[in-house]
Length: 404
Image 1 (cartoon, rainbow, N blue to C red):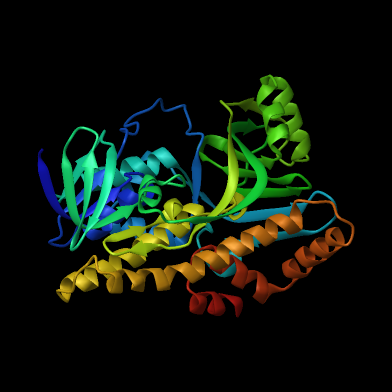
Image 2 (image 1 turned 135 degrees about the horizontal axis):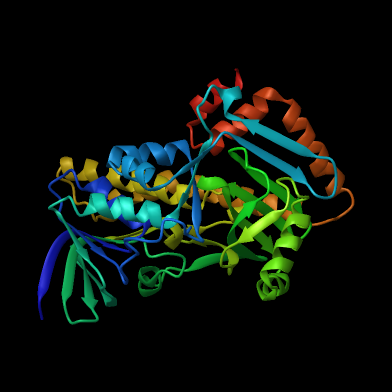
């Protein structure tokens, strides 16, 4: 049996796992990234990934530090300058504008495959990172001083720390026996890419329907990425419609804010569920990103929380390494958990509350949320603080923004 020794083994080479590897690369640490399948390296220029992410300023800054941002721009990104949010059951609305904050934009909408390709390009430039793909772990052993991964092909990977960046159904989390608190949203997201009669105005649009939020997220070439959260039964029905019927219903649900929907790409549906791991760390083991937490996509914060995990875990591990402390010790890893668990839980609770407040047509609640949207829209300081926090700015920066 061939054994390979590393300081850190990262399971999952997607956006979060690849970011973590790159964040740790400028060190003397040896790193392995284990990924089950090779992501697409190329695609037709007129095609769009069905999965996109709303990347905040904080995440953009991380990608810049990792050296991946310029490649993302070269491939394809779409900045957005404004957000328009309104309630389908009343007159409540709120408008956010980057100009009000003195910012060039509020963030970027980027296809997931673009982010992954740019990060893997950076990952492969580092001599201290081995990229094992395709590779599948079979068994986890946590021993004194190290973690061992037995692979399907018979190899053995050993590390002082193993990190699960392997998604919502994390193999590593399951192997470690870490339990998860689940919050069923009872919604399914229908996603696709469309072209509309009128341009999207570099604006992210979201309409709150009683069945769930409908988002039009701007993409290059005038396209928009659709995230339509609704019941599982309705999602199944929407997928069964022919293109013409789907475009007609989509336009009506969106109040034709951008005119008619003129073209639609492939459609898919994903069940939505909130999850929060009861533990982020064990000796020689840590969970990041969706392996530790998943939230409702209505605020587009999912991947950004994972990237914040990356920054914190990399900071903790590199500090321990420089101080010659054990990088996989429970004491070291608890610093990461303490720094991130509270913020992630707060966001999870907030998104659950937003979903409960807006995804219904209950009298009383309907009037309350419409009033709240209108009041927030008219309150400059509060609105500026909300959008600054949504951009991933620190509380101090958000407070400064609220005084503008």
